Length: 504
Image 1 (spheres, helix red, strand yellow):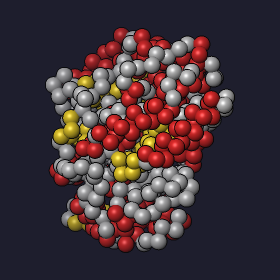
Image 2 (cartoon, rainbow, N blue to C red; image 1 turned 135 degrees about the vertical axis):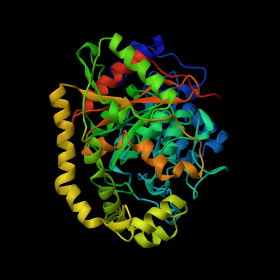
Image 3 (cartoon, helix red, strand yellow; image 1 turned 180 degrees about the vertical axis):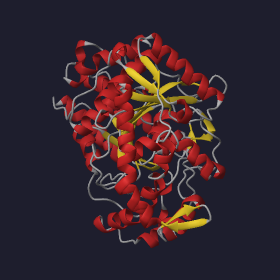
Image 4 (cartoon, one colour; image 1 turned 120 degrees about the vertical axis):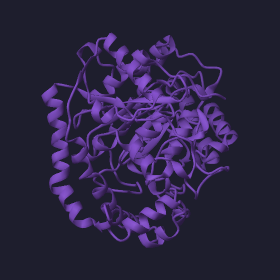
């Protein structure tokens, strides 16, 4: 771990207490390299203005349209907010721990006055009147919103191959470490913006992995909180039984700060690794790994053991069966009713059918026309009615899956399950990246915890030795253990250090 990174973690409580001057943070030559924590400290100690940082990030975003990271880049609004933040600080007024810090928001989460497209053409003209509660917490703490980030259309995928929204050809949000490859999804744009140094952090949303997958593939950290820990209002939904907003940033320290602001809770601090016990289930979470992912994950586990963590093998032979009984039945069945309720609540002026008619991406169009609208599920010989499977999932399947995780944690005495966040590094971007086999491969390790409603965190583990692409480590913890999970993530981050930035 670098001395600079260690200083950031040590001074974080001082920053939040308003006395960052006690331990100065050095101003970097490249302003786009600052993290959320560093930005907050630099602005508070008057080493950097919000306007300077916001301008640097906007300029970098405008110089990199080929990442397709943004749907709406709000230059005028962001600069006005930054200048207002600077004026307030000069007058001795601070709004909170994110005063003047620029952030981004996935384009399915409401920011007042900006379009909320959910990445689909039919919602292009929808402008919410109020911030989503999660966004409002960030703004109340002083954050500046740079704009709305690109996403897999209607959040139904992991590739970010969105045929309706891109700022520069070819189609698809791009990975800043290799612009021929995916940035993950569905929170593709936030991942690309954070990894590409267009923003230090922001919000994504996660139904089955949509925060953790793009964070991992672009070299960042991301948290899926325990279900309902964050307010679900003001977010274009897939399924209320699975959906949650989640913070994304370059470091776990940043994610912990954003989480504490959103929850108005305590700020996590690093846990002593000597008291941490992690479980590894290889038959499911470690199968089909590519060489880079396997190498980085093995090296990371060895470092954690050397640093004092206990890592034990666990057995979860029924995990696949239990998860399959819940995953598609819940997401595909709730998608229709939840989108219908959302469109009515926010007076969007469109029906689900009208939204579906204008879907631009072929994979999402096929899912809506073949499954969501007719209320069907895939079956061995075609499709079947979704209602009975959904009823069984909610009454038996979900409780059984949640109990299976709880029993595993308790029986083995572990704080969390440890695994690679995805089985592979980022694959080439293009239509094939949206195929069902690719979707199932990339969502496999993040989906079960999502369906159980438990918290999940991805931590940067390193760059693959062959591809030089990021690999993430995933932690799934017991329900409600978010703060403990972040504390463990902070400790892991201290051991593994930061990964190098992408090529410029």
